Amino acid sequence: MKNLLKTAGYSLLSFWLTLLTAAYAVAQEQGVEVSTRTTTTRTEQWYTMPWVWIAGGAVFILLLVALMRGSGSSSTSKSD
Image: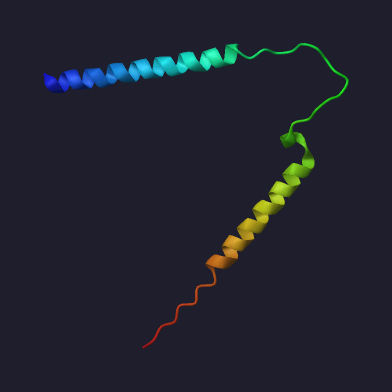
């Protein structure tokens, strides 16, 4: 009986925490005020610029090459 009450208590606590987290997330979304005015200047997000993707790809390739090169240079010597 004690075990059943403990399990039910954990389930109820989990339910309430999930419910409160969801309510908090919805409240955050509704609190944002969106401006409907248009301006003449257009700002781009950083991830829409092509040079960011090119630089990121270059860094990724360099890291990949460095990791592949480093793993192949194991100098273990066997002595008979």
